[in-house]
Image (cartoon, rainbow, N blue to C red; front, top):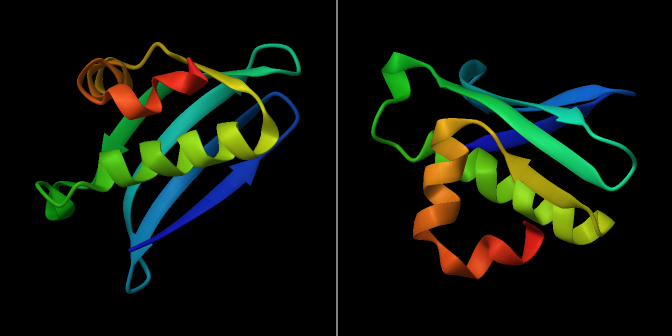
Length: 92
């Protein structure tokens, strides 16, 4: 599974794909220079149960760590992963 990031001035998203088919998308908005707000996660039903959402979230965490920014998880899925996985809370 491949995850690509598409970053624009005020918004962006992470897109997961496999064999040319979109598996999922996680969208975010910039809140100033040092924070992104993850607002929505969507997974293609064909890829259900394959950790697509978590894979995209981990890519967002890596992006946050690399660029020294914080994540505000307003998306219920992203928030639930942060609640369960203590090791990634450094970017909150």
